Image 1 (cartoon, rainbow, N blue to C red):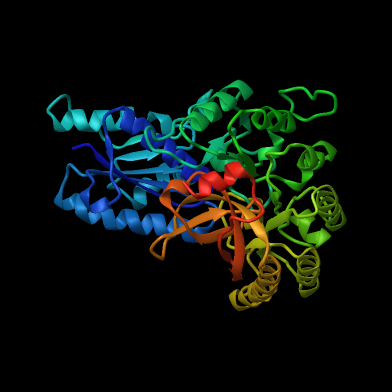
Image 2 (image 1 turned 90 degrees about the vertical axis):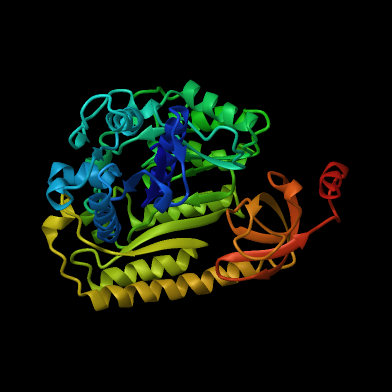
Amino acid sequence: MNRVYIKTYGCQMNERDSEAVAAQLRGRGYTIVADEQSADVVLLNTCAVRDQAEQKAIGKTGHLAKRKRKDPNFIIGVMGCMAQNRGEDLLERLPDLDLLVGTQKFHRVPEMLDRFIASQKGIGPRPSTIVDLGEESGSEETIREHTEGERKVSSFVSIMQGCNMHCTFCIVPKTRGAERYRSMDSICEEIEELVAAGTREVTLLGQIVNSYGMRQIPYRSGISPFVQLLERVNAIPELERIRFTSPHPRGFQKDLVEAYGRLEKLMPYVHLPLQSGSDEMLKRMRRPYSRRRFSEIVSQLREVCPDICLSTDIIVGFPGETHEEFEDTRSLFEEIRFDMAFIFKYSERSGTKAAEMGDDIPAEEKESRNQVLLEILGRTSLEKNSALVGSVQKVLLEGPARKGEGMFMGRNPGNRKVIVPASPRLVGEIVPVRITKATVTTLSGELCLTGIDESESAVLSH
């Protein structure tokens, strides 16, 4: 009775949390399975950023409850942001839950399950629903376990928890709490362990990752704590690539911009959330930068790193968004020419300041504005990807592609997905690929043996 299935909703932070829980459970003797039908325990790691994600998790829990009524020993747990946001009120809608676990308590899940498993073996009574949503000092240091014996070419590393920004549309400060930072030593030790196990690329994770260490770690010669961390990670032998997400435009000061010109392992890719191109909208969203400042950051990054790739987040239909304010977003979005973007139609989230503003933009208008930006994005992305046809890109091969026998997927420095026929032996290697085809989202190519050094040629011909 120890087979566990974990389903994750939402962001990369949630994915990383689920991975750590899985590793902790394996260390406790549990088996992580890929099929919920074969599981004795199903854990849902939930998201509260958008209503759709919450409704999916609630619907899934209701479906699982039908199975529980047939099998009382079946265990259902809800973890993460939705659990933290809705609290014990969630039990009124989902009375069959066994676990309700907050965002600072993921590391407590194994001992909670132990209590249920022990009762099934006749050791003590079966617990009633376990609810643990409290804060816990030091919880930021508990998300560091990874799956042993399983090589991950590219790995996520959590460097902090929480957020201090309080954007009016965002529920994260409520669900994740205030910012708490891991020590640099702990982060680097984790990365060194990953590299020893075969990781070549790491992505540093935080709700606002470039606020790492603020007001806790002193600046050094004008260098912020986050850039100090980047410097230390950059010095780790055998690590090839560094990425991070998600930053805030406010944190892109001179030292971080210049890091793209001097840290050779920091990849030329930035996810830079814009949210809106209207100064008035940015004020209502409580985003402490202007349209002009955002454009300055982009210009500075492109000056330091001309081939840098940019992605962003945009919200359309935020309360009170006028046609003129949307036009400000549209014009800036088109002017900057992002490589990738996540475009969201605003949905009201209880517990946010924006929820008090009303939701006054009709659904059809939100959809229309969404489609305008998607059309621009599709056109721009295709143009940028097509410009790479004929070029040779250094691609870190991560593993088999989803489709096509003998096809493998990797990413170039700009984080573009590349599909190429290759040998399994090349997984984890950085290989030169000549791009032959481009779509809006993907590049395709072939291994290139010309114009490379002898060491690379030896790898490819191995």
